[in-house]
Length: 302
Image 1 (cartoon, rainbow, N blue to C red):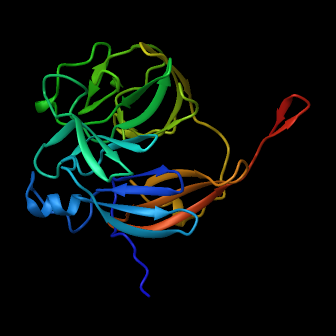
Image 2 (image 1 turned 90 degrees about the vertical axis):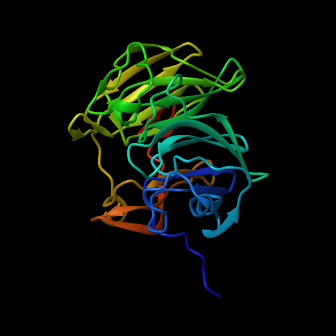
């Protein structure tokens, strides 16, 4: 029996819900070039790849509703049984998006929450990142950074910087009202940046690592602390430490990364796809994260 494997791709996301990973879109060879939207593109984007993490088995499943047009370089985050997709690049000319969609993993149905617009919301962009936070028992989405074309940019966000088509915008989307807001930003705000990783620490904090800012790749770390109206940024430069991760895992660009907590002490980073030496990759890598700290007499020993 032939084992199903998703096609090679990069600039996509995989999102975990329970014991499953959900992967959509991305840049791959079969995607129609220089097309805003047609039946072939819609058909190809109306499927989701699903991985059962305990067994590592992939299947492809159809979806209903209209999928986003920002098919690669988008940002994704999950709240309970819904995956949210922001922005992305359409694949032709300077067609970037700032739309927000939800995808229900129970019904496999797409829903547009906020359409692409040049009049409100974040910049139309790719390469941003998004997380979910919870403040005062309310759900919010946070979108940070990214890059796009200055020719179709929205009105600049107060306090944000725009340089070489990149930005350091920070926007909140309140699910209860369906509105974008601009929080008050204090501390060490990152420079205009894209293609970084953004990961939640708690329901109101997150960590940003790496990315491309101005003209070089960064290895700076930023920690964000959120309220419903503000965000405090703290920078940690040039983190130390080392890893024993093989080159087959690290020697690639634009893969998707997910974290699976198998037990309280066994955690995995799951990497799919990306690009190496100009070629797309379709392999799945599981990297076990070892416990490096333990509780000792009320403190932590690492």
